[in-house]
Image (tube, rainbow, N blue to C red; front, side, top):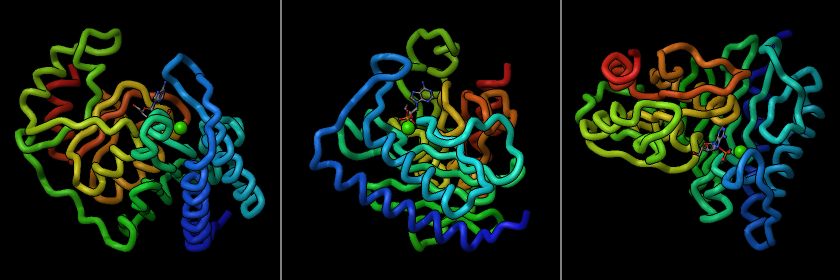
Length: 264
Ligand code: 2AM
Ligand code: CA
């Protein structure tokens, strides 16, 4: 089926702004906080309310589209046929709860597995990153540049300290040697914001061990639109329906770090 991508783009932008206002308004209310997979994996009534808002609105306007959402109010999506929305209503819930900032709404819209539209809305900063395949990426009204070459020595790498102490998933010493080599490290606690910052050239690399499709779907469209690279830790394409470690970055940084620190 032919989609009207202009129409979908306008609809998504206005829905995201409205959802952002709902979240800001909720700062005056008492949050209901629950835990999910472990005591630090938080979910609030707002995560659920915002996802429901998107699912209901999308089903109303685009009944043939499927929705994969973190909180499970959308569809059971196991393949990428047709048009699929991949939504995280609040990425960085821990930041939302503890800091009331540094969280984002993330949406990627895919057609037959191809990323067509990507959005990351840093609600409190009022920064909407958006991209449409082949038509450029923007931060609010400003067009983002294609990513230029950055040497690893001048790179800012986003990585969580978890991966620099002994852990079950990766060789922390190899990561420590990379951290010593780059210019600096940061960690914002929202995968969506870290991916948006890669697209904007504010970060040059982002390494993380456990993301779900809704954490990276919007960022993938944005990053690819500015010539960045986003893969798993071996350089393979990310699946849109499975969890994966993620390595995103400036193409020069991505290729060198992959060869020297990750592939073997
Ligand atoms: P969330 O806030 O939507 O859960 C924090 O380091 C980043 O990783 C956030 O983007 C967070 O998304 C995500 N995250 C935290 N725990 C996760 C888990 N168990 N699986 C997948 N993503 C996770
Ligand atoms: Ca979330």
